[in-house]
Length: 387
Ligand code: LRH
Ligand code: MN
Ligand code: MN
Image (tube, rainbow, N blue to C red):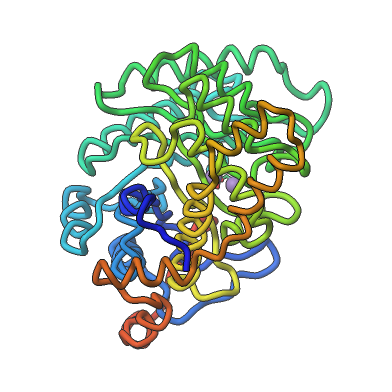
């Protein structure tokens, strides 16, 4: 059995933020399948997220998306979360579901549209004060479909102006994280397509602005762990949106498509001092279209934990020695030895020693929670692309 005691403290400190939208119904543009028990409002989404934390102790916070999670009084939502043993986390803005934003929001040619989009972000910051959230996460669905359609340079300049106004409103303890994505919904150019653009924009704002890296937002074949290394090296990796993909922005369970890639990313996190580092938020950004949502999130946080444990098990001293001596295959073998270590039995023991269930899936199933919500909740909301 793998001895986890040397890395137990780091595992215990691990915290992964859940997206509220993972608990609602979602799907593709072809069909959204309803699931019995789907939350009808943000309060129920948070109650469901709390179940993931209850059985894993890995997910103490829940990210909100505004306006999907709009409520009358956010201090009530905050207390509700606390009553369920979790806290509210990152606030995500949304400038991609309004007719006014057809040709952009923060980059729009029309000052009135930019004003509306900036005001939405200022409202998000007000919400963050009420929820106690630190991070405002901005992902922009802005770009163009045809060469010549848009003034690429002008949009970049307007983006800087808009972000500056939002940034100026942040409290001392708050941060702005700017997420990039290489395409979709725009198919020719995107205004924040890559880490370099995000880095350039946030660097121009100041220390409280960081980059958000969504693992599904890169072209196939991109060496994501290299980007992780570079952003950590530059002190600008603010957060992860973890998920996995086979093709594009698939939003599947993290670690499902390419566990080795997740391992390589987490190794660079460990190597670069990003683990248990308050500057780096570990979030999930996933949708569960065909699988059960709460167990889907349990699977996700366990996948991250398992790969974190393996990344922590890399014999870094031996690896450095092999690297320095030019021992190509030796270094590769040391790296892979950790990747191929099955840490699951040891993590079950570790959970038990902390008063947690050895098998969180079995414990959740036995709790009766799923049956209860399926009976009680009629008429759930669609996550994300609807309510
Ligand atoms: C965009 C994105 C972004 C959104 C979320 C719902 O593709 O990754 O983080 O806020 O999806
Ligand atoms: Mn994302
Ligand atoms: Mn995405």
